[in-house]
Length: 160
Image (cartoon, rainbow, N blue to C red):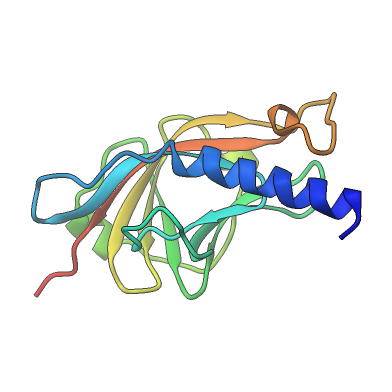
């Protein structure tokens, strides 16, 4: 493996570790599968269903069309709907009109709530906490210059 490929792999591992350690445990409420806070770096995804810290890339992705155009989008069959500034209930999310469309970075403002139907059929709500665009001083391999999206989330258990 050449040095460039080795550095790229090392950088990805560090970014994944940073992502993992920012998620907080499983709540005591039996109706909630998990909740927490996440900081996703550009092009990373999160599996909202998975209880482990070694997530496959499912449910939602902070993707990029170009170095200047970012979005939050559903992947692997997940669906999303912009709810607004108020905190939705599970029932409100279930009644939302979900789509497979991406939400552009310009629409992702702090305080915005997004309902998600995961690829395993659970409902979740994501609350945007902070959006950091790509640094004008972007340096490949320097994660502090990458775009990031911070959000809190709640995933409800499937109803019986």
